[in-house]
Length: 586
Image (cartoon, rainbow, N blue to C red; front, side):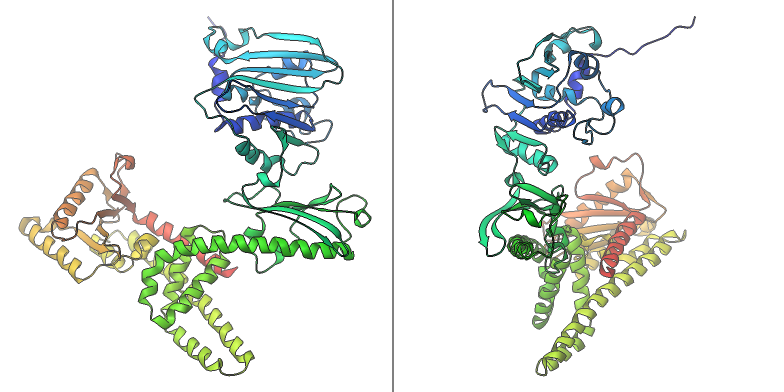
């Protein structure tokens, strides 16, 4: 017999859909997105005082909902609004944000009870959703009755109001500051959509970072009120720049007033500026469509120069502070290498590091350190002696010759860094060929990598072996692996860094997959060797081969044990060098 089957929808779905948000503030943002889609011009959010029973209220002045719309559209789970109304809203032509049809459950992440009241066409319909009632109900979700009312609305009443009560006490209360921070990135630039949190509108100050607010009177441009923030963190503001307003009305798109073309300001830093400037009485210099200013007007040029100077000073202060912190972190990592340089060369090394920090502003500490390592390698080449001698000689001659010799220093520096990176890249190609040969043994990879620990990463480039450590390994292997055990003699390399940390590397054949027995044996090597060292410093183990067997779960390994394949090590090192070479060529 052939029959049909149907899905049933458990009431737990409402709770699961409400739990798709990472924080209470992000869930509230979803309700604000609904107001955006409803063509609201204003949204008012009231947050409760902590540790009270007050409700969260989200109210807008949008199109609201009729009883039919609330029943057939709002309660239609996973219904894409765009399929019903199109990609744009009908009144303000906004791009619709609702896509999955589950944003209506955002409030149920925060609260147990959610009341939604929509006003449209003179009628007010109210829906109450109780999460506890839904979960305890044994029927399908579509069969659960929800309290619903439809009544005449008050004169002038419009929009939608969502009231969240019985807030989940397992979650921290949403805070106004954090909510503003979440909303400012999305709605801070929208003149036709204003958001109020506890009756305070979103503003430039809601962007986390260093805020500057100044006001002055210029001879030609008149009163200039400038308010901007240099955003902190890795995420730049949405639509960065400074929006120009004439008597409160926005003109065109946000601008950087030439700072994005200033060689002294890194482009990534300039894109972290977020603010607005208000000029008074300059409407005659605005284009007819309010898309921009008449750029050659004296008033605008004067205002532009002033704004650029003030913002540049703010960026310099932020830049100097962040550069100082990053330099301190970098200095700590390369201090030993700097001390190994002759005293008269350390100054040039410091200058090179400063240039690297300026040029690669905004890059991660890891990438900056990689460039610094290569730069310090380059500084150790003899070619610098000739350049510095030429600079010293020209310093007593005319300024033009002196400047030319200094320019040559920079050219030599960049070319040497590039040559060093290119040579290392070529070395990796040859190393890859060695790994691919089926006859390659442990002793071959050991010999190739013993003096090239930089291949394993910047962390290990500072490590090295010495006569004492080599003698310890030699003595241990000679006494432990002799006679019938000679064939089992491992290829071990014991290295040490400046912090007295030891690294024991066991090289396996490139065709050998590392097993659990190999790991246990390596730990025994470590125990035996630790007894021969006077220091009690921790010793890490690195095992290199074809990779690990599929039965080994790296999550269960000790933090001091690292398993790598030759292929992954070469690939990672090659990627770092490729990025460095590409950066230098720009």
